[in-house]
Image (cartoon, rainbow, N blue to C red):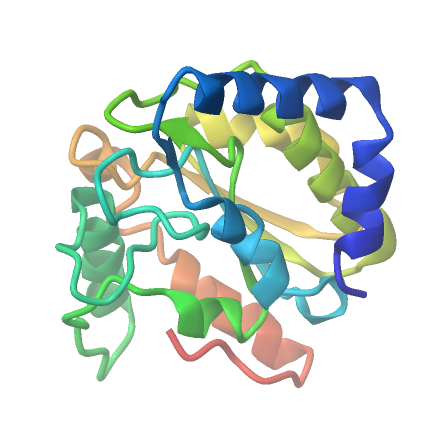
Amino acid sequence: MCWNKFIARQAQMPYYQNLQQFLQDQKDLGKIIFPPQALCFHAMDLAPLENIKVVILGQDPYHGDNQAHGLSFSVPDGVKIPPSLRNIYKELARSLPDYTMPESGNLTHWAKQGVLLLNSVLTVEKGHAGSHASKGWETFTDNIISEINKHKRGVIFLLWGSYAHKKGRLIDTQRHTVLKSTHPSPLSAYRGFLGCDHFKQVNLLISQREETRINW
């Protein structure tokens, strides 16, 4: 299933209408919003529900020029790799044999393999981290996770940091796997993320189901 019907259902709800009005008001004030509107649902476009094997939950989009393109932790080709993503690459290199750290921070190839790279909040004002928190996006992404929880089995949720851990309440651990650690940011990566072996565990779990592993 593509997510269009889901989005259409959300669009009928007051919270979503209020969210869209907030975004329009911000634009009317001349505020620059990231990512570009066409990429707001990019994670969902690349990972339709039936393809999802893994969910990696971020907080909100990068707020610098040319960084956000609708995928959590990811940046377009040619953009400097952010510190959190660099730590993600370090953990991959540490835990997976023969892994070569990429020069690009573009994670589109993960998404196309069924990794939903979902931020809790899908937009941000340029230069102001967290500026669109508590405006309605959290309800929208809660509902995405509830949809996955209800209609899928065996999805592996990677929840990094306390903000992501809060979404765990929406996940039935009898149906799905939840792996938690600290956030990969420089402030907390060394307190549990580096050494968590999440990427190795994901591929082991997928292999046990005789499905195609993620080519990280």
